[in-house]
Image (cartoon, rainbow, N blue to C red; front, side):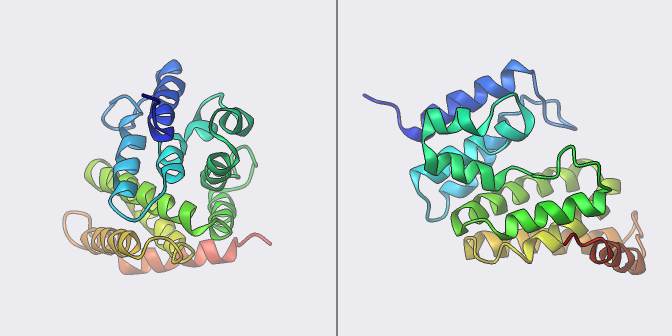
Length: 199
């Protein structure tokens, strides 16, 4: 029996992330647990085999020596196109964080609805772990993801709603003890991102 595209992608991603011994921040678990979680979230809503494959592969170009040409040669143009839409474009740009995140947001805004669905799954899994392990960085991260959500409305509506709830609940929890982040801190942060919008 021939393996599915998604199964081939699972093996490829496992090997790519494993070859550099990439680990999840905070838990030190093998990195592949994150692509697996993203794939499982995507599989819970209407999806294609190419979307499942791209979910497994979504961080390979960004984080490992893998190139988009490698992805295309192994998985075809459709999967490579999705991975390209999911790969941050600001890496190595030399810009400040506000500019980099704005540039990546613009890149996500131009993505297909299928890629936006995978991006929503990625956001859900990353936000869950961050709220659990790093409430200090979460305040910056949640503002960024709240802005990212604005451009992901063409993704799966169920996942968009789920992501929105996680972000809103996270922001609300940071206003309360023991964090006590002032509401004006979030307002100021949003303003900084707007001031650093890239043309």
